[in-house]
Length: 151
Image (cartoon, rainbow, N blue to C red):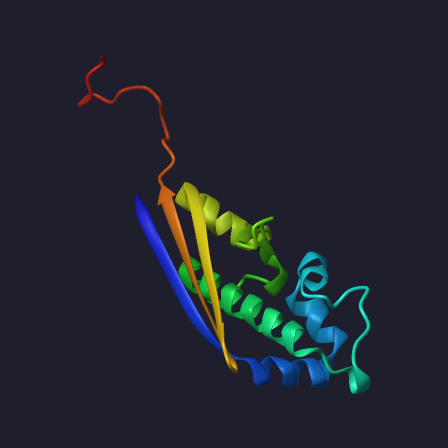
């Protein structure tokens, strides 16, 4: 089994500044429609001057930290991986889980069968996330090799 680990820390006002400056362009480039909806950015009213609510800014910052942690675990950073290829969703219990698409999925698939675990935490103006992939290598052959014995 191979273990891949990534972690990240985000300053929430940095995400708020990007939202204030770039608005929907930032949201569309970084977050999938499902992530935007889960964080309250689709079909919801924004406060004056386009500012997001404190909760939304923290949720989006947490997703950003999780995405950063995942690409660190992948070992690529953002080279060759688009922001929306790393998608963070919540289960019915609220626990975060990961969906990989495109290049991010291809990289992880090459490692074998991977189970991802995400942990997000918020405190004041900071969010942190840790991503762990537990991967078992894919078998290239089901036939025993010369050194193996049939049972």
